[in-house]
Image (cartoon, rainbow over all chains, first blue to last red; front, side):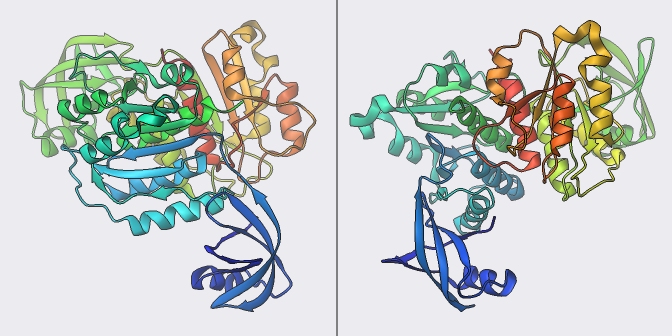
Length: 248
Length: 248
């Protein structure tokens, strides 16, 4: 099954951009009259009939819409420090999208070796992984910010009214603070909602002060088991833990 | 922490092979008298003092041994059909080793597009991932065989005496048989042992007859949730499910 993406819907007409149109007409040889599947990136898949097979701008008429198509029953926002090797981060983006992710924040920790992150390429990976794995929602990528800025924005004090409904977790490895850590599974099992935020640190882990700040802002310290996981593996394991928790 | 591997232990002396010796002496500049950590690949890590820093063959004296070092509390054997793109399979080998795997069988299904698999390179990836993630056990890679041969070898009829202690699962996607599938989590929760075998199919899934044969040989049909996962992602999700199941 081939999926197209469009953010250009007017009434019952949708248009594909240049890249998608070229792929649709030149590569897959679709013609006027063909039925194609188009996601809006926000949760709906439309079955459309091509009315104009222009390879620079395909137009299609919507015949049916499927809401919440390929959606998972939770909302997961992961904040993951960029890895030194960018391929590893991109792999994590692809896999987490396949498994089920809603938003990703590349965050820069005090011990991050990589301080710069370009979101454009990441956005393309998220789009293509969402299409490949038949999801109608494309995970959103946030602009990079520091771990502290992220905590300040998403910590409990900023969203008081919803606090009981959001589970915030921070996965860190080193025993640098005296706080007890529970396993991600245990913490998920004791949570009744479906809004989840997880913070994953850089290769050198969070600093003690970053971890303490997160904990003071309502992030529950968790561990991901006894294995020593790389940053990108930790993110995929955390994403899988959430995914399996909501799998019946 | 840097880990070396050796399979050459005599009394309290261990020798590193040419690759490991070169890495130890030429790259990391270790000298006689230095303490290094050497795994035997089977579950023990030895603290050793270098007695001869020959870059072609390092010799070291064992001072301490740590049994079950970096071990996980289960035994997981995954049989995974090679993916068309070899990089994806190698990535799966690396990640599953990091998370916790004991044996991997590349199996060829009737719908496998790739029928040939070289184990030599895979073995190197398993070794390097085990060292990197501080494990003393290197997952074993089996020689390729067909899905049917694998089922015949590891199905319930061949190992009757231990049957209650082994959980066999087959993850397949298409609803081609009428058997009900439970989630991997549910099946793990109802199992008391720690010996687990999981079969993961190729891009085009198992054939109905392969799946039926597996089920008749005691493999429990499972699903891995609602997301449409690539072969290599399915393997990592299954491995993570087992890992998290045994995480306290």
